[in-house]
Length: 293
Image (cartoon, rainbow, N blue to C red; front, side, top):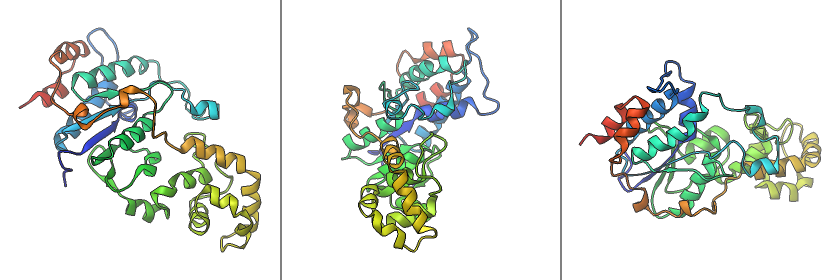
């Protein structure tokens, strides 16, 4: 089912750009020799999504840089990822230019991740239905009535999906992540606490603050190794609480560029100047598709 036209689609442009860069067969150079394959892939996906989903209101969010406020909380956060490939770096700015030229409203704020922008827009546009287009599990914490998570083909993740797969409701997702950790982002969590144990703790005791307030109850819970678990939770309380700060999305990024109404994000087609930019990039298919009557 296609979402109604008043739905606002908030798309993770950085994730799509990286995915396009690493997709086989997407090497493509602009006439001046600049590698622009990732920009080509990103804009192709965006054009397809906008047309297939009948998008009328849209914003595309980007990371503004590799380091954010989370690196001040924990310098090792995402440090395992290293620097982006050299030929991808020029494409970050070109991607934002291309998205703007297509009329899709790019947004980026220094010191914050794209997910924080999605969370902030979700909060500020709460009178509209919102579709968050991303494969990032961090966004599960934003699921609520009126908010959908979708992939770029329109396949949605619902609250029921999350409960069935992980055993926790979206409002407990940050506690779940804080306990389990995330090796992809270097979020420590609590050692040897997996998904089943985390879900059982949450079901019995609630959020992270409640778990630590009721730590003396953990040893008696019907969880395998509960006595050792209580000790690990106590020994790694600082890790768990730091992890919670790392995984919790910022829902009020203090930047005027995010003070938007649905009208500000209305898709009205590509800009008149778009042709010149796509001449420079050396491809026109996404522009042509979004310009068609």
